[in-house]
Image (cartoon, rainbow, N blue to C red):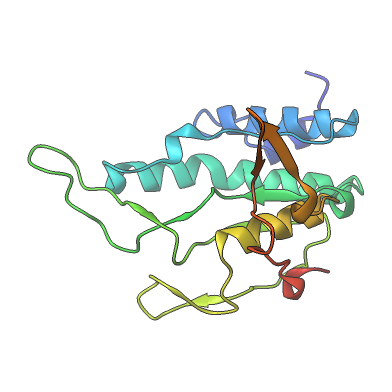
Length: 190
């Protein structure tokens, strides 16, 4: 209620279908303003193993305006350079629609060979596309980045070294990126 009408519209709070994501992203911005260093919005609806024809269009329509609003708002407040916005998952999806069996709506499975993630601010080169997939969209063919490379890059942008981020569990080391397995993608850094 403390936000201006323009800000509320920017995040899509004035539209029923964009309001839930808009509220989540506006709360995220407010947390960052107050010094919270890491905020995650978990979008569990995005896992479209089934019913992709209905789900994808609806979900994009519900998320696009609030996501753009967050980036614009952070930029207008001078916070984008120090805030990394990451929109994506741990991997991509296959570029084909797959049958899920009799009586089930088609969907898509996971794909670790080619994936799309967008990021803004926080040390990422603005307006830049890094890498490309084959003509079919299945495998990375240019500036190939493994999941380990991606995690190393995000951790670097957050001021951490993936090589040194190791924890112990039951007396054995656990790492997000095993030493020597990931490299920072210098080409997407500002």
